[in-house]
Image (cartoon, rainbow, N blue to C red; front, side):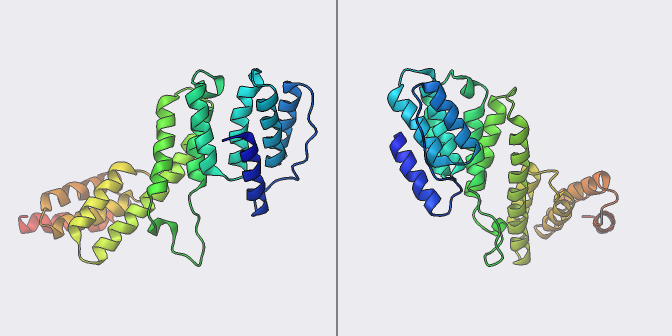
Length: 262
């Protein structure tokens, strides 16, 4: 995408409610000075002015090292203006054409792609169904991008932030799995409940559903005539979470299965 198109797109975004300043610029005679001015506009959240400075560098100083940096900062301006799909494309192109650049090698561009996916996720609004009831494809995209980043860049300075987002995304996906599992259970579909709970426990341990999921999974196993598996998950519940509100129920259920010879 050309710098002119980026600036126009950002102007439209700001006109539709994005956060930015007025977009006024005063170009300097050197690439470095224009780059520094562009960075100041990024800090001031004037995405249009920032895009103009970086676009000017790319057109007037195409062989300067600042021209390459300007490509990255144009993506940052798109990100700041909440044009996340465009920012993702720009970061991907930067990685493709500058694979050895410092801001690629340290994981910055890849992290921003994952963060952009996360930023696109819908929030909860009282007039609409909760987010965990909706399709989670975009949430899974965010999780996959960020996990890929963590695998690929073990020493990146952006890992801490990525881990925070992965935890939030994981909680959101776990909320969805629990919602669907309960939906199936309440409608008398125990095998579908088993499949969802197993997936929840395999992928999203430690986010707050372990005890409830183990208890309900045992009940679902009994409902599909798999008592041995029910015993296994209830024993795990009792051993790992002896003070859980479900621990007593699990002990009673285990005793009942044993006394019935199942």
